[in-house]
Image 1 (cartoon, helix red, strand yellow):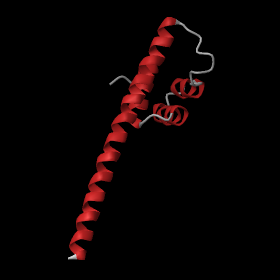
Image 2: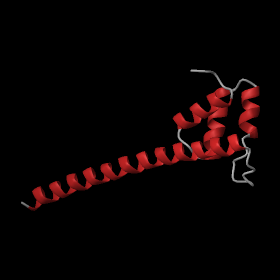
Image 3: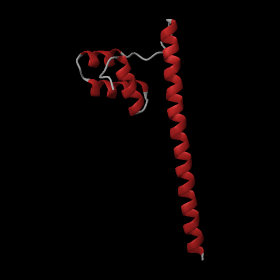
Image 4: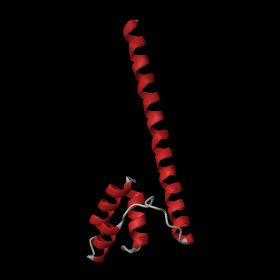
Amino acid sequence: MYIAFGFMFAVMLLLATSIVESKVKRVEARTARVERKLDLIIEHLGVDAGGLMPDLAPVHALLAEGKEVQAVKAYRQITGVGLKEAADEVRRLGGTPR
């Protein structure tokens, strides 16, 4: 009987952990999209972000050398965004179009 309760508790704990992890990933993705939109607004307005914008010079240098994969890796390292977001942004910056 105790084993059944323990098993049920473990299953419920795993389910709860999975749900929370899924929600955290969605929030992180939404946050990255919002940050990107804000970056585009700042860029469009020509506002000096005063050091708030990351230095993407290494990414631009890699793109100039045709090293798109390394540019995506560098962008992820600099900004902390996920792979898809980094790949999309590198393409926008001048990498290979989709």
